[in-house]
Length: 197
Ligand code: SF4
Image 1 (cartoon, rainbow, N blue to C red):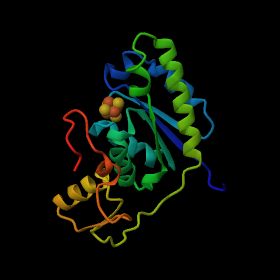
Image 2: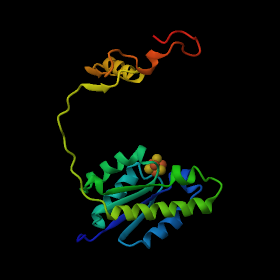
Image 3: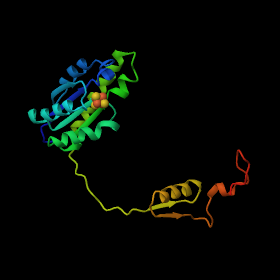
Image 4: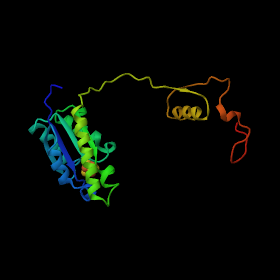
């Protein structure tokens, strides 16, 4: 890789959600020792406007080309931070997250030392991953808004019905001459002992 890596690490306290258990100062100090890390900033609430503004400012000030946020699950805020770095001119896919809340403070609330150790490892992993990130361009492709369901058993029929109820055309394909799959062959079904069809 010819590009000179400049990684920024942002450690979030999430109020006491993280800082109440995990030693965020120790994490920040450790992150400063990592190769290619040129800036480490600790925030109380990284997803809030002041936290995001600090990320944007640091991208310009330190000429960052990778950003790692150590905070909560990517399920919640990965889109937030991708958008944030994009607004600062960085490709949104040059961003990586370490989950030190759900994976550390929340699940190890009574063991500060071990929770901190785990968070340190997660941040180190995220920084390592960040080194290999590459810019991505999002493509838009035309989509045919209809569905093909293969297999006319109970699951297939239910899936076809749900999709049709949502307003999309559905093509249901079944290799047997009748629908129902294995269920259709059952004489009685628990708990009513009715015939299955
Ligand atoms: S980024 Fe996540 S961990 Fe940090 S303050 Fe926001 S919700 Fe809490």
